[in-house]
Image (cartoon, rainbow, N blue to C red; front, side, top):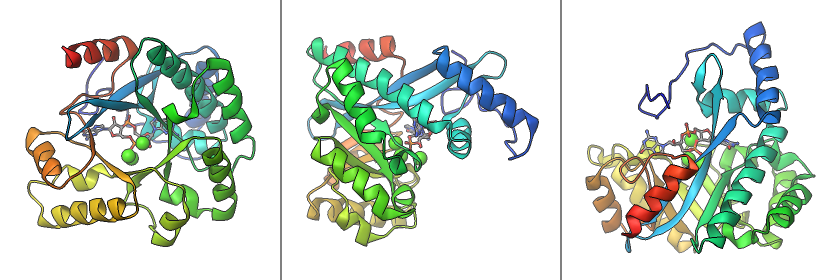
Length: 277
Ligand code: C2E
Ligand code: CA
Ligand code: CA
Ligand code: CA
């Protein structure tokens, strides 16, 4: 796997202008990639800060394009959202993530798998039945799954999104609010959502050692979450110093390059074995 950027894959500076033929070509290629199973799902470990134990993993999509190489999800996911390809993409991710999750649980690896949902997914009335179908086909239990949503995805027609979220929550799925602090945040919605987890956006975590403001923000978010009965995950943990600070602030879970970058399944399995040894 080519690792040309800090994110672990080559970033292509393609300009995905709405009307360029390139974008259309890529979209039909993405459709084919999904059909041919040319996407990959990587897993990034989440570790309990106080005990050092593996808590779970976040599933992150990768597209290994035959000529462009690894295309970052930040590039193809927003594009898939705009062209309505996201439904197929999310379906592919859910199938793969649930199947991998079932395998880990069969092997006695008791982890929770986090899956990212997009704005359009949260407005798709078929989503709960789709998820129920994939759960039945793979044999996973809803409590093994955390569905990550963003503030902005909920803010767009919130009543529709809330109805879908509540149905999935009633079925036993857990919800996490992702990139917390970066959306058009509304504490009113935070209160109405059936959340289990809050994820502090990495932009507040990465500079923790240098920014007094980020320290204040991170501490405030942790207190807010704990007072609401939620557990807190910090993403973007790149150094041991940051991990120690988060421990001091009583943050629950850490995710970031210091622990591990996102890994393909076989490497993830090796990481799990090594971390247990
Ligand atoms: P996200 O959900 O906020 O995921 C965390 C991103 O932070 C991932 O980028 C991860 O590789 C990166 N990251 C993890 N640890 C560190 C660290 O220590 N330092 C830094 N600088 N970055 C770190 P990735 O995999 O490129 O994904 C980017 C975004 O694409 C995700 O952000 C998520 O919004 C979206 N995405 C990825 N996979 C999926 C998917 O299957 N479905 C949907 N809807 N969105 C996805
Ligand atoms: Ca996420
Ligand atoms: Ca995030
Ligand atoms: Ca993000």
